[in-house]
Image (cartoon, rainbow, N blue to C red; front, top):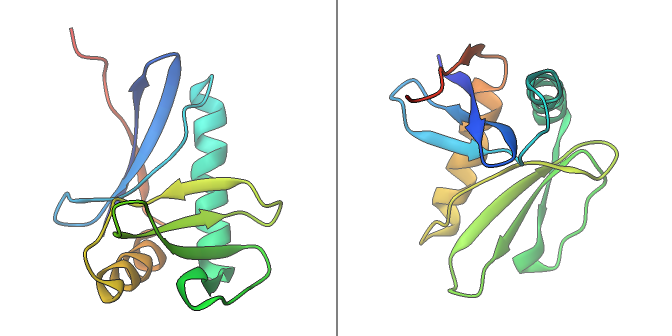
Length: 123
């Protein structure tokens, strides 16, 4: 099973969702407090399980909550998870292939109910 790691970030805290092999699946925005980050984690858990998939490369459209698959300026495939209110709550890295982006989405769904770990600030 994966884990959500809440960690310090410039100007606040953020979280990453890691798979069981410790690879980062998705990254959050920066939150002002740990409590707000925990709410973000809860939103990922709720939204990912109910999310539709909107393949913007193919011109598809879907209602929130949803995973949007798109191509960035370098031609890599990425996804972002939007909550029911349309806010982006988790984003991916770039993938060379569409199939890899879809596997990333499947990994979010598998791991979205994972435990939360709070990383200690580095000294």
